[in-house]
Image (cartoon, rainbow, N blue to C red; front, side, top):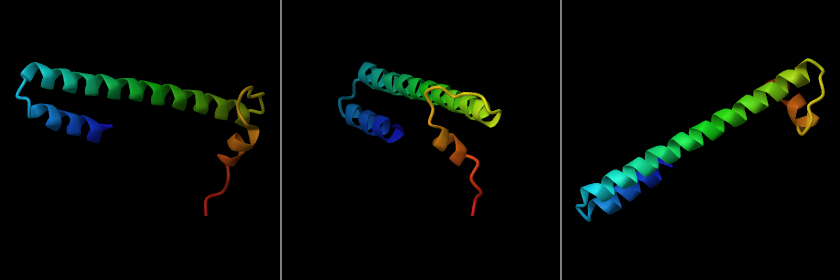
Length: 75
């Protein structure tokens, strides 16, 4: 995502329009913030499901096999 933003800024820089450059940078920053928020939410959901699985509770909507593999011994 960062690379795409950098490429967009370089492409827009050729126009020498400050407003366009600022807009592209702002959109890139907002996009990265939204993606970080989504990743954080998904990580929290997975952590909660993993905790419930470890406590022996039902994990509706999550594959028990996938959650069990999180506890597999590392080689």
